[in-house]
Image 1 (spheres, helix red, strand yellow):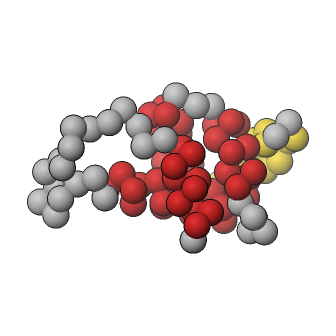
Image 2 (spheres, one colour):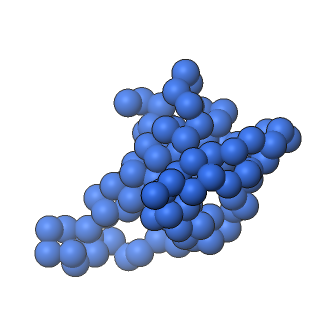
Length: 98
């Protein structure tokens, strides 16, 4: 089920329709990265190219978690000490490169 929520993106109010799990993932990312939802959505919007904001946001969340998991070996033992974050800008750059 998709949930429609209003967000402010680059100073303008807009709405996004995302599933509950994606909204929860965005909230988790914001807490981990110490960034507001509005700031994160603005960063995603600035780097989305021609795709829609909702699609770009889903791709961002997927890429964020894939990059996070890449830090672990197959047996889930950390390869390096856990970092406090994986930096939003690095994930946005990876999304842009796709």
